[in-house]
Image 1 (spheres, rainbow, N blue to C red):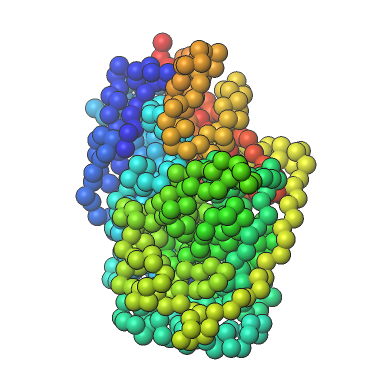
Image 2: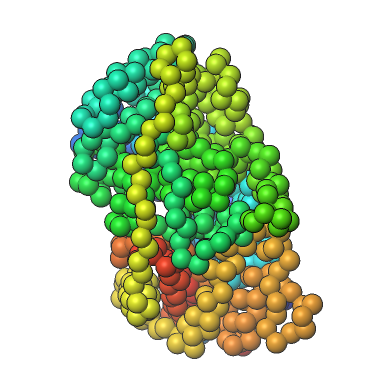
Length: 593
Protein backbone atom coordinates (compact mmCIF):
# COMPACT_ATOMS: atom_id res chain seq x y z
CA UNK A 1 0.00 0.00 0.00
CA UNK A 2 1.26 3.47 -0.82
CA UNK A 3 3.67 2.41 -3.56
CA UNK A 4 4.10 4.18 -6.86
CA UNK A 5 6.71 4.28 -9.59
CA UNK A 6 8.76 7.44 -9.59
CA UNK A 7 12.01 8.93 -10.75
CA UNK A 8 13.44 10.57 -7.64
CA UNK A 9 13.25 13.99 -5.99
CA UNK A 10 9.69 14.21 -7.29
CA UNK A 11 10.64 13.52 -10.90
CA UNK A 12 7.92 11.73 -12.89
CA UNK A 13 8.23 8.26 -14.29
CA UNK A 14 9.11 7.99 -18.01
CA UNK A 15 6.36 9.17 -20.35
CA UNK A 16 6.02 5.69 -21.86
CA UNK A 17 5.42 4.15 -18.44
CA UNK A 18 2.43 4.36 -16.13
CA UNK A 19 2.99 5.08 -12.44
CA UNK A 20 0.44 2.39 -11.50
CA UNK A 21 1.81 -0.91 -10.28
CA UNK A 22 1.18 -4.19 -12.11
CA UNK A 23 1.75 -6.65 -9.31
CA UNK A 24 1.88 -10.43 -9.14
CA UNK A 25 2.73 -12.86 -6.36
CA UNK A 26 5.13 -15.75 -6.86
CA UNK A 27 5.12 -18.72 -4.48
CA UNK A 28 8.09 -21.12 -4.32
CA UNK A 29 8.34 -24.33 -2.33
CA UNK A 30 10.57 -27.41 -2.61
CA UNK A 31 11.71 -26.50 -6.13
CA UNK A 32 8.23 -25.70 -7.50
CA UNK A 33 7.20 -22.15 -8.39
CA UNK A 34 3.83 -20.72 -9.41
CA UNK A 35 2.49 -17.20 -9.77
CA UNK A 36 -0.75 -15.26 -9.81
CA UNK A 37 -2.15 -13.10 -12.55
CA UNK A 38 -1.35 -9.38 -12.65
CA UNK A 39 -3.34 -7.01 -10.45
CA UNK A 40 -3.05 -3.24 -10.73
CA UNK A 41 -2.75 -0.47 -8.17
CA UNK A 42 -1.15 0.07 -4.76
CA UNK A 43 -3.72 -2.19 -3.03
CA UNK A 44 -4.04 -5.10 -5.48
CA UNK A 45 -6.33 -8.07 -4.92
CA UNK A 46 -5.94 -11.49 -6.53
CA UNK A 47 -8.42 -13.87 -4.88
CA UNK A 48 -6.50 -16.82 -6.35
CA UNK A 49 -5.56 -20.26 -5.12
CA UNK A 50 -2.15 -21.80 -5.76
CA UNK A 51 -1.38 -25.46 -5.09
CA UNK A 52 2.20 -26.73 -4.73
CA UNK A 53 3.28 -30.34 -4.11
CA UNK A 54 4.65 -31.25 -0.68
CA UNK A 55 7.17 -34.02 -0.15
CA UNK A 56 7.70 -34.97 3.49
CA UNK A 57 11.35 -35.46 4.53
CA UNK A 58 12.28 -38.96 3.39
CA UNK A 59 8.58 -39.67 2.85
CA UNK A 60 8.12 -39.60 6.63
CA UNK A 61 4.89 -37.91 7.75
CA UNK A 62 5.51 -38.51 11.43
CA UNK A 63 5.13 -35.56 13.81
CA UNK A 64 8.85 -35.55 14.60
CA UNK A 65 9.84 -35.46 10.91
CA UNK A 66 7.37 -32.69 10.05
CA UNK A 67 8.43 -30.56 13.01
CA UNK A 68 12.05 -30.96 11.93
CA UNK A 69 11.39 -30.10 8.27
CA UNK A 70 13.56 -27.17 7.29
CA UNK A 71 11.71 -26.28 4.07
CA UNK A 72 10.21 -22.81 3.71
CA UNK A 73 7.26 -21.48 1.71
CA UNK A 74 8.57 -18.31 0.06
CA UNK A 75 6.07 -15.72 -1.12
CA UNK A 76 7.56 -12.95 -3.26
CA UNK A 77 5.81 -9.86 -4.62
CA UNK A 78 6.92 -8.40 -7.98
CA UNK A 79 5.94 -5.47 -10.13
CA UNK A 80 5.89 -6.23 -13.85
CA UNK A 81 6.91 -3.19 -15.85
CA UNK A 82 7.81 -2.51 -19.49
CA UNK A 83 11.43 -2.10 -20.51
CA UNK A 84 12.71 0.37 -23.04
CA UNK A 85 14.18 -1.27 -26.18
CA UNK A 86 17.79 -2.39 -25.94
CA UNK A 87 20.28 -0.15 -27.67
CA UNK A 88 20.79 -1.21 -31.26
CA UNK A 89 17.58 -3.29 -31.32
CA UNK A 90 13.97 -2.59 -32.12
CA UNK A 91 11.11 -2.65 -29.67
CA UNK A 92 10.58 -6.34 -30.38
CA UNK A 93 13.06 -9.11 -30.90
CA UNK A 94 15.19 -11.49 -28.88
CA UNK A 95 14.46 -14.48 -26.74
CA UNK A 96 12.32 -14.60 -23.66
CA UNK A 97 14.52 -15.00 -20.60
CA UNK A 98 14.16 -14.33 -16.87
CA UNK A 99 10.70 -12.79 -17.23
CA UNK A 100 11.78 -10.51 -20.11
CA UNK A 101 9.87 -11.45 -23.22
CA UNK A 102 10.04 -10.21 -26.75
CA UNK A 103 8.30 -11.89 -29.63
CA UNK A 104 6.20 -10.49 -32.43
CA UNK A 105 3.68 -8.13 -30.91
CA UNK A 106 4.85 -8.56 -27.32
CA UNK A 107 6.26 -5.74 -25.23
CA UNK A 108 9.49 -6.43 -23.35
CA UNK A 109 8.80 -6.58 -19.62
CA UNK A 110 10.82 -7.24 -16.48
CA UNK A 111 9.83 -8.02 -12.93
CA UNK A 112 10.97 -5.77 -10.10
CA UNK A 113 11.22 -7.03 -6.54
CA UNK A 114 8.86 -5.47 -3.99
CA UNK A 115 9.31 -7.77 -0.99
CA UNK A 116 8.89 -11.28 0.34
CA UNK A 117 7.55 -13.45 3.18
CA UNK A 118 9.05 -16.73 4.43
CA UNK A 119 6.88 -19.30 6.22
CA UNK A 120 8.60 -22.40 7.64
CA UNK A 121 6.74 -25.67 7.10
CA UNK A 122 7.29 -26.61 10.75
CA UNK A 123 5.44 -23.47 11.87
CA UNK A 124 2.59 -24.16 9.45
CA UNK A 125 2.31 -27.73 10.72
CA UNK A 126 1.98 -26.63 14.36
CA UNK A 127 -0.35 -23.73 13.54
CA UNK A 128 -4.10 -23.86 14.13
CA UNK A 129 -5.17 -27.14 12.54
CA UNK A 130 -2.25 -27.01 10.11
CA UNK A 131 -3.46 -23.76 8.57
CA UNK A 132 -2.39 -20.13 8.63
CA UNK A 133 -4.80 -17.29 7.99
CA UNK A 134 -4.41 -13.56 8.30
CA UNK A 135 -2.23 -10.57 7.44
CA UNK A 136 1.50 -11.17 7.10
CA UNK A 137 3.78 -8.10 6.85
CA UNK A 138 6.00 -8.08 3.78
CA UNK A 139 9.73 -7.84 4.38
CA UNK A 140 10.74 -5.11 1.99
CA UNK A 141 13.87 -2.99 1.51
CA UNK A 142 13.81 0.51 3.02
CA UNK A 143 14.39 1.89 -0.49
CA UNK A 144 13.42 0.57 -3.91
CA UNK A 145 15.03 2.66 -6.61
CA UNK A 146 12.41 3.69 -9.13
CA UNK A 147 9.57 3.60 -6.58
CA UNK A 148 8.14 6.20 -4.23
CA UNK A 149 6.91 4.81 -0.92
CA UNK A 150 6.33 8.24 0.63
CA UNK A 151 7.95 9.62 3.78
CA UNK A 152 7.57 6.47 5.76
CA UNK A 153 9.91 4.21 7.63
CA UNK A 154 10.60 2.84 11.05
CA UNK A 155 8.59 -0.02 12.47
CA UNK A 156 5.36 1.01 14.14
CA UNK A 157 2.98 -1.10 16.20
CA UNK A 158 0.14 -1.13 13.66
CA UNK A 159 0.23 -4.06 11.24
CA UNK A 160 -2.32 -2.40 8.97
CA UNK A 161 0.07 0.52 8.43
CA UNK A 162 2.69 -1.80 6.90
CA UNK A 163 2.65 -3.39 3.43
CA UNK A 164 1.14 -6.84 4.00
CA UNK A 165 -0.52 -9.77 2.28
CA UNK A 166 -3.75 -11.40 3.39
CA UNK A 167 -3.21 -15.15 3.00
CA UNK A 168 -4.77 -18.51 3.76
CA UNK A 169 -2.33 -21.42 3.70
CA UNK A 170 -3.17 -25.01 4.50
CA UNK A 171 -2.02 -28.59 3.94
CA UNK A 172 -4.34 -30.53 1.63
CA UNK A 173 -5.42 -32.97 2.86
CA UNK A 174 -5.24 -31.48 6.33
CA UNK A 175 -2.70 -32.93 8.75
CA UNK A 176 -3.57 -33.70 12.34
CA UNK A 177 -2.01 -31.32 14.82
CA UNK A 178 0.89 -33.01 16.65
CA UNK A 179 0.13 -34.53 20.03
CA UNK A 180 2.07 -32.95 22.93
CA UNK A 181 5.20 -34.94 23.66
CA UNK A 182 5.89 -35.73 27.30
CA UNK A 183 9.27 -34.22 28.12
CA UNK A 184 11.60 -36.23 30.31
CA UNK A 185 12.84 -33.64 32.78
CA UNK A 186 16.39 -34.68 33.54
CA UNK A 187 18.31 -34.03 36.73
CA UNK A 188 18.99 -30.51 37.88
CA UNK A 189 15.72 -28.96 39.02
CA UNK A 190 14.08 -29.64 42.38
CA UNK A 191 12.10 -32.89 42.32
CA UNK A 192 9.06 -31.18 43.86
CA UNK A 193 9.01 -28.61 41.04
CA UNK A 194 9.38 -31.28 38.34
CA UNK A 195 6.53 -33.36 39.77
CA UNK A 196 4.31 -30.32 40.07
CA UNK A 197 5.15 -29.31 36.48
CA UNK A 198 3.73 -32.61 35.22
CA UNK A 199 0.53 -32.15 37.23
CA UNK A 200 0.22 -28.51 36.18
CA UNK A 201 0.47 -29.38 32.47
CA UNK A 202 -2.01 -32.24 32.88
CA UNK A 203 -4.45 -29.95 34.67
CA UNK A 204 -4.17 -27.29 31.97
CA UNK A 205 -4.85 -29.80 29.17
CA UNK A 206 -7.89 -31.20 31.00
CA UNK A 207 -9.71 -27.83 30.92
CA UNK A 208 -11.17 -28.52 27.47
CA UNK A 209 -10.59 -29.79 23.95
CA UNK A 210 -9.21 -26.39 22.97
CA UNK A 211 -6.26 -26.94 25.36
CA UNK A 212 -5.41 -30.48 24.26
CA UNK A 213 -2.67 -29.52 21.79
CA UNK A 214 -1.37 -26.28 23.29
CA UNK A 215 2.39 -26.39 23.91
CA UNK A 216 2.33 -25.93 27.69
CA UNK A 217 5.64 -26.19 29.49
CA UNK A 218 7.20 -25.17 32.81
CA UNK A 219 10.61 -26.85 32.61
CA UNK A 220 13.39 -26.27 30.07
CA UNK A 221 16.65 -28.10 29.37
CA UNK A 222 19.91 -26.16 29.57
CA UNK A 223 23.08 -26.63 27.51
CA UNK A 224 24.36 -29.25 29.97
CA UNK A 225 21.18 -31.32 29.73
CA UNK A 226 19.90 -30.23 33.14
CA UNK A 227 16.27 -29.35 33.85
CA UNK A 228 15.54 -25.72 34.77
CA UNK A 229 12.32 -24.01 35.85
CA UNK A 230 11.46 -21.28 33.30
CA UNK A 231 11.25 -18.53 35.91
CA UNK A 232 14.95 -18.97 36.72
CA UNK A 233 15.80 -17.52 33.29
CA UNK A 234 14.13 -14.15 34.01
CA UNK A 235 16.52 -11.55 35.37
CA UNK A 236 17.72 -8.01 34.50
CA UNK A 237 20.57 -7.95 31.99
CA UNK A 238 23.43 -5.46 31.87
CA UNK A 239 22.81 -3.05 29.00
CA UNK A 240 25.27 -3.01 26.05
CA UNK A 241 28.11 -0.48 25.82
CA UNK A 242 26.86 3.06 25.24
CA UNK A 243 23.65 2.62 27.23
CA UNK A 244 25.03 3.56 30.65
CA UNK A 245 22.42 5.62 32.50
CA UNK A 246 19.80 5.02 29.80
CA UNK A 247 16.09 5.46 30.53
CA UNK A 248 13.08 3.72 28.99
CA UNK A 249 12.48 6.35 26.30
CA UNK A 250 11.34 5.25 22.86
CA UNK A 251 14.73 5.75 21.19
CA UNK A 252 16.44 3.52 23.77
CA UNK A 253 13.75 0.84 23.52
CA UNK A 254 14.02 0.72 19.74
CA UNK A 255 17.83 0.53 19.88
CA UNK A 256 17.73 -2.36 22.36
CA UNK A 257 15.15 -4.20 20.25
CA UNK A 258 17.43 -3.68 17.25
CA UNK A 259 20.47 -4.97 19.18
CA UNK A 260 18.56 -8.09 20.20
CA UNK A 261 17.32 -8.70 16.67
CA UNK A 262 20.87 -8.48 15.28
CA UNK A 263 22.24 -11.33 17.39
CA UNK A 264 22.59 -14.10 14.75
CA UNK A 265 19.61 -16.43 14.46
CA UNK A 266 20.64 -20.10 14.70
CA UNK A 267 18.32 -23.00 15.53
CA UNK A 268 19.16 -25.51 18.26
CA UNK A 269 19.34 -28.23 15.59
CA UNK A 270 22.19 -26.35 13.90
CA UNK A 271 23.87 -24.92 17.01
CA UNK A 272 23.99 -28.18 18.98
CA UNK A 273 23.54 -30.78 16.19
CA UNK A 274 20.31 -31.98 17.80
CA UNK A 275 17.46 -34.09 16.42
CA UNK A 276 14.09 -32.40 15.74
CA UNK A 277 11.99 -31.57 18.78
CA UNK A 278 14.89 -31.18 21.22
CA UNK A 279 14.98 -27.65 22.63
CA UNK A 280 17.98 -26.21 24.51
CA UNK A 281 17.74 -23.02 26.57
CA UNK A 282 21.01 -21.18 27.21
CA UNK A 283 21.56 -18.32 29.62
CA UNK A 284 21.95 -14.81 28.24
CA UNK A 285 25.70 -14.87 28.96
CA UNK A 286 26.07 -18.17 27.07
CA UNK A 287 23.89 -16.80 24.26
CA UNK A 288 26.09 -13.73 23.78
CA UNK A 289 29.29 -15.77 24.18
CA UNK A 290 28.19 -18.01 21.29
CA UNK A 291 26.51 -15.05 19.56
CA UNK A 292 23.88 -17.43 18.22
CA UNK A 293 20.50 -18.68 19.38
CA UNK A 294 16.84 -19.10 18.56
CA UNK A 295 13.71 -17.30 19.67
CA UNK A 296 13.78 -18.00 23.42
CA UNK A 297 17.34 -16.70 23.78
CA UNK A 298 16.45 -13.54 21.90
CA UNK A 299 13.30 -13.04 23.96
CA UNK A 300 15.15 -13.54 27.26
CA UNK A 301 17.81 -11.02 26.25
CA UNK A 302 15.19 -8.39 25.41
CA UNK A 303 13.30 -9.19 28.62
CA UNK A 304 16.50 -8.64 30.62
CA UNK A 305 17.05 -5.26 28.95
CA UNK A 306 13.48 -4.15 29.71
CA UNK A 307 13.73 -5.28 33.33
CA UNK A 308 16.98 -3.32 33.70
CA UNK A 309 15.08 -0.21 32.59
CA UNK A 310 12.29 -0.87 35.09
CA UNK A 311 9.71 -1.98 32.51
CA UNK A 312 7.30 -4.72 33.57
CA UNK A 313 7.67 -7.52 31.03
CA UNK A 314 6.88 -11.20 30.49
CA UNK A 315 7.95 -13.97 28.11
CA UNK A 316 5.20 -15.55 26.02
CA UNK A 317 5.57 -18.97 24.35
CA UNK A 318 3.49 -20.34 21.49
CA UNK A 319 3.35 -20.76 17.72
CA UNK A 320 3.89 -17.94 15.21
CA UNK A 321 3.84 -17.70 11.43
CA UNK A 322 7.65 -17.77 11.44
CA UNK A 323 8.46 -20.18 14.28
CA UNK A 324 6.93 -23.43 15.50
CA UNK A 325 8.40 -22.76 18.98
CA UNK A 326 8.04 -19.00 19.19
CA UNK A 327 9.09 -16.88 22.13
CA UNK A 328 8.25 -13.18 22.34
CA UNK A 329 7.99 -10.48 25.04
CA UNK A 330 4.77 -8.99 26.41
CA UNK A 331 4.65 -5.60 28.15
CA UNK A 332 1.36 -4.59 29.81
CA UNK A 333 0.02 -1.13 29.01
CA UNK A 334 -0.13 1.83 31.35
CA UNK A 335 3.65 2.16 31.73
CA UNK A 336 4.08 5.35 29.69
CA UNK A 337 4.54 7.73 32.63
CA UNK A 338 7.60 6.80 34.61
CA UNK A 339 9.45 8.46 37.51
CA UNK A 340 12.60 10.42 36.81
CA UNK A 341 15.99 8.78 36.80
CA UNK A 342 17.02 10.41 40.08
CA UNK A 343 15.01 11.78 43.05
CA UNK A 344 13.63 15.19 42.18
CA UNK A 345 14.17 14.84 38.43
CA UNK A 346 11.12 15.30 36.13
CA UNK A 347 9.09 12.22 35.19
CA UNK A 348 9.67 10.48 31.87
CA UNK A 349 6.84 9.95 29.41
CA UNK A 350 7.11 7.19 26.81
CA UNK A 351 3.81 6.99 24.87
CA UNK A 352 4.94 3.70 23.31
CA UNK A 353 4.52 1.97 26.69
CA UNK A 354 0.97 3.19 27.24
CA UNK A 355 -0.41 0.32 25.17
CA UNK A 356 0.00 -3.43 25.72
CA UNK A 357 2.67 -4.60 23.29
CA UNK A 358 4.10 -7.84 21.98
CA UNK A 359 7.75 -7.57 20.99
CA UNK A 360 9.13 -9.99 18.40
CA UNK A 361 12.92 -9.83 18.77
CA UNK A 362 13.54 -12.32 15.95
CA UNK A 363 11.82 -9.98 13.47
CA UNK A 364 12.89 -6.80 15.28
CA UNK A 365 9.27 -5.59 15.40
CA UNK A 366 6.49 -4.95 17.89
CA UNK A 367 2.71 -4.90 17.64
CA UNK A 368 -0.30 -4.19 19.81
CA UNK A 369 -1.55 -7.16 21.80
CA UNK A 370 -5.09 -6.12 20.83
CA UNK A 371 -4.48 -5.67 17.10
CA UNK A 372 -6.73 -8.20 15.34
CA UNK A 373 -4.71 -7.70 12.14
CA UNK A 374 -1.68 -9.17 13.91
CA UNK A 375 -3.40 -12.44 14.76
CA UNK A 376 -1.19 -14.50 12.42
CA UNK A 377 2.06 -13.11 13.85
CA UNK A 378 1.53 -14.96 17.13
CA UNK A 379 -1.18 -17.40 16.23
CA UNK A 380 -1.26 -19.26 19.52
CA UNK A 381 -0.15 -18.17 22.99
CA UNK A 382 0.23 -21.11 25.37
CA UNK A 383 2.40 -19.88 28.25
CA UNK A 384 3.29 -16.58 29.91
CA UNK A 385 6.00 -16.36 32.56
CA UNK A 386 8.25 -14.03 34.52
CA UNK A 387 10.63 -14.39 37.45
CA UNK A 388 7.79 -15.10 39.92
CA UNK A 389 5.42 -17.50 38.16
CA UNK A 390 4.25 -19.30 35.02
CA UNK A 391 0.70 -19.08 33.64
CA UNK A 392 -0.94 -21.53 31.23
CA UNK A 393 -3.47 -20.00 28.84
CA UNK A 394 -6.59 -22.15 29.23
CA UNK A 395 -9.01 -19.61 27.76
CA UNK A 396 -10.90 -20.29 24.56
CA UNK A 397 -8.87 -17.66 22.69
CA UNK A 398 -5.21 -18.28 21.86
CA UNK A 399 -4.56 -15.35 19.54
CA UNK A 400 -3.39 -12.29 21.51
CA UNK A 401 -6.33 -10.08 20.55
CA UNK A 402 -8.82 -12.81 21.56
CA UNK A 403 -7.35 -13.30 25.03
CA UNK A 404 -7.94 -11.81 28.46
CA UNK A 405 -4.59 -10.50 29.64
CA UNK A 406 -5.65 -10.52 33.31
CA UNK A 407 -3.32 -13.17 34.76
CA UNK A 408 -5.35 -13.24 37.99
CA UNK A 409 -8.40 -14.58 36.11
CA UNK A 410 -8.41 -18.29 36.99
CA UNK A 411 -10.93 -19.11 34.24
CA UNK A 412 -8.39 -17.99 31.62
CA UNK A 413 -5.03 -18.72 33.27
CA UNK A 414 -3.67 -21.54 35.41
CA UNK A 415 -0.76 -20.32 37.58
CA UNK A 416 2.11 -22.69 38.35
CA UNK A 417 2.45 -21.35 41.89
CA UNK A 418 -0.74 -20.77 43.88
CA UNK A 419 -1.84 -21.14 47.49
CA UNK A 420 -4.10 -24.06 46.59
CA UNK A 421 -1.43 -26.13 44.79
CA UNK A 422 2.21 -25.16 45.32
CA UNK A 423 2.75 -21.98 47.36
CA UNK A 424 4.79 -19.23 45.66
CA UNK A 425 8.51 -19.22 46.35
CA UNK A 426 11.50 -17.19 45.23
CA UNK A 427 13.65 -19.08 42.72
CA UNK A 428 17.31 -18.01 42.35
CA UNK A 429 18.13 -17.00 38.80
CA UNK A 430 20.36 -19.06 36.51
CA UNK A 431 21.56 -15.93 34.76
CA UNK A 432 25.04 -14.53 35.36
CA UNK A 433 26.57 -11.17 34.58
CA UNK A 434 27.07 -10.47 30.88
CA UNK A 435 30.47 -9.32 29.62
CA UNK A 436 30.47 -7.53 26.26
CA UNK A 437 33.50 -7.91 24.00
CA UNK A 438 33.91 -6.60 20.48
CA UNK A 439 36.27 -7.11 17.57
CA UNK A 440 38.65 -4.46 16.27
CA UNK A 441 37.25 -2.24 13.45
CA UNK A 442 39.30 -4.04 10.82
CA UNK A 443 37.25 -7.20 11.33
CA UNK A 444 34.03 -5.50 10.29
CA UNK A 445 35.76 -3.90 7.29
CA UNK A 446 36.99 -7.33 6.17
CA UNK A 447 33.51 -8.73 6.73
CA UNK A 448 32.02 -6.01 4.50
CA UNK A 449 34.56 -6.85 1.79
CA UNK A 450 33.71 -10.57 2.02
CA UNK A 451 29.99 -9.81 1.79
CA UNK A 452 30.62 -7.64 -1.28
CA UNK A 453 32.45 -10.49 -3.01
CA UNK A 454 29.58 -12.89 -2.32
CA UNK A 455 27.00 -10.42 -3.61
CA UNK A 456 28.96 -9.81 -6.80
CA UNK A 457 29.47 -13.54 -7.25
CA UNK A 458 25.71 -14.11 -6.93
CA UNK A 459 25.07 -11.62 -9.75
CA UNK A 460 27.79 -13.10 -12.01
CA UNK A 461 26.56 -16.67 -11.51
CA UNK A 462 22.95 -15.68 -12.23
CA UNK A 463 24.03 -14.22 -15.58
CA UNK A 464 26.09 -17.32 -16.33
CA UNK A 465 28.01 -16.75 -19.57
CA UNK A 466 26.85 -13.20 -20.17
CA UNK A 467 29.28 -10.34 -19.70
CA UNK A 468 28.63 -8.72 -16.31
CA UNK A 469 30.33 -5.32 -15.92
CA UNK A 470 30.27 -3.50 -12.57
CA UNK A 471 30.03 0.29 -12.46
CA UNK A 472 32.53 1.42 -9.82
CA UNK A 473 31.28 4.98 -9.79
CA UNK A 474 27.79 3.80 -8.94
CA UNK A 475 29.13 1.43 -6.30
CA UNK A 476 30.92 4.30 -4.55
CA UNK A 477 27.70 6.35 -4.57
CA UNK A 478 25.74 3.41 -3.12
CA UNK A 479 28.37 3.02 -0.40
CA UNK A 480 27.87 6.61 0.76
CA UNK A 481 24.10 6.12 0.87
CA UNK A 482 24.44 2.94 2.94
CA UNK A 483 26.25 4.71 5.77
CA UNK A 484 23.07 6.46 6.95
CA UNK A 485 20.60 3.59 6.62
CA UNK A 486 21.22 2.09 10.06
CA UNK A 487 20.19 5.31 11.79
CA UNK A 488 17.05 5.39 9.63
CA UNK A 489 16.23 1.81 10.68
CA UNK A 490 16.13 3.00 14.30
CA UNK A 491 13.65 5.81 13.62
CA UNK A 492 10.09 5.72 14.86
CA UNK A 493 7.41 6.02 12.14
CA UNK A 494 6.74 9.57 13.33
CA UNK A 495 10.38 10.56 12.88
CA UNK A 496 10.64 8.85 9.50
CA UNK A 497 7.43 10.49 8.25
CA UNK A 498 9.20 13.85 8.48
CA UNK A 499 11.60 12.78 5.75
CA UNK A 500 15.36 13.21 5.59
CA UNK A 501 17.34 16.40 4.85
CA UNK A 502 18.40 17.15 1.29
CA UNK A 503 22.21 17.30 1.04
CA UNK A 504 23.40 20.89 0.61
CA UNK A 505 19.76 22.06 0.66
CA UNK A 506 17.98 24.47 2.98
CA UNK A 507 17.24 23.12 6.49
CA UNK A 508 13.52 23.02 5.76
CA UNK A 509 13.94 20.88 2.64
CA UNK A 510 13.12 17.25 3.40
CA UNK A 511 12.38 14.34 1.08
CA UNK A 512 11.59 10.68 1.45
CA UNK A 513 14.45 8.23 1.74
CA UNK A 514 13.58 6.82 -1.69
CA UNK A 515 13.67 10.29 -3.25
CA UNK A 516 17.04 10.98 -1.63
CA UNK A 517 18.62 7.78 -2.94
CA UNK A 518 17.18 7.95 -6.44
CA UNK A 519 17.87 11.65 -6.74
CA UNK A 520 21.50 11.25 -5.67
CA UNK A 521 22.09 8.46 -8.16
CA UNK A 522 20.16 10.25 -10.90
CA UNK A 523 22.49 13.23 -10.68
CA UNK A 524 25.56 10.98 -10.80
CA UNK A 525 24.40 8.55 -13.47
CA UNK A 526 22.33 10.47 -15.94
CA UNK A 527 21.82 8.26 -18.96
CA UNK A 528 20.85 5.12 -17.01
CA UNK A 529 17.63 3.65 -15.73
CA UNK A 530 18.35 2.34 -12.24
CA UNK A 531 16.73 -0.47 -10.31
CA UNK A 532 18.18 -1.35 -6.93
CA UNK A 533 17.68 -2.29 -3.32
CA UNK A 534 19.55 -1.87 -0.04
CA UNK A 535 19.19 -5.21 1.78
CA UNK A 536 19.74 -5.81 5.47
CA UNK A 537 20.59 -8.93 7.44
CA UNK A 538 22.34 -10.10 10.56
CA UNK A 539 25.81 -11.68 10.57
CA UNK A 540 25.33 -14.82 8.52
CA UNK A 541 27.03 -17.23 6.13
CA UNK A 542 27.93 -16.86 2.45
CA UNK A 543 24.97 -18.90 1.21
CA UNK A 544 22.51 -16.60 2.98
CA UNK A 545 24.12 -13.52 1.39
CA UNK A 546 23.82 -15.05 -2.08
CA UNK A 547 20.20 -16.00 -1.42
CA UNK A 548 19.45 -12.46 -0.22
CA UNK A 549 20.72 -11.02 -3.52
CA UNK A 550 19.23 -13.71 -5.76
CA UNK A 551 15.72 -13.34 -4.38
CA UNK A 552 15.55 -9.76 -5.72
CA UNK A 553 16.12 -11.06 -9.31
CA UNK A 554 18.17 -7.93 -9.91
CA UNK A 555 20.48 -9.82 -12.29
CA UNK A 556 17.75 -11.63 -14.19
CA UNK A 557 17.68 -9.85 -17.53
CA UNK A 558 18.68 -11.02 -20.99
CA UNK A 559 19.81 -7.54 -21.99
CA UNK A 560 23.43 -6.99 -22.82
CA UNK A 561 23.48 -3.21 -22.30
CA UNK A 562 23.36 -3.43 -18.49
CA UNK A 563 25.83 -2.75 -15.73
CA UNK A 564 25.64 -3.57 -12.04
CA UNK A 565 26.70 -1.92 -8.80
CA UNK A 566 27.30 -3.49 -5.39
CA UNK A 567 28.19 -1.82 -2.12
CA UNK A 568 28.31 -3.12 1.46
CA UNK A 569 28.53 -1.70 4.95
CA UNK A 570 28.69 -3.41 8.33
CA UNK A 571 27.55 -1.49 11.41
CA UNK A 572 28.95 -3.03 14.64
CA UNK A 573 26.95 -2.94 17.87
CA UNK A 574 29.73 -3.41 20.40
CA UNK A 575 29.49 -7.19 20.80
CA UNK A 576 31.49 -9.56 18.55
CA UNK A 577 29.15 -10.79 15.79
CA UNK A 578 26.24 -8.51 16.72
CA UNK A 579 26.28 -6.27 13.67
CA UNK A 580 23.99 -4.97 10.97
CA UNK A 581 25.04 -6.11 7.49
CA UNK A 582 23.90 -3.91 4.59
CA UNK A 583 24.16 -4.87 0.91
CA UNK A 584 23.13 -2.46 -1.85
CA UNK A 585 22.62 -4.05 -5.27
CA UNK A 586 21.58 -2.18 -8.40
CA UNK A 587 21.11 -2.76 -12.13
CA UNK A 588 21.85 0.11 -14.51
CA UNK A 589 20.38 0.03 -18.01
CA UNK A 590 21.59 2.51 -20.61
CA UNK A 591 18.93 4.83 -21.95
CA UNK A 592 18.40 5.13 -25.69
CA UNK A 593 19.26 8.76 -26.40
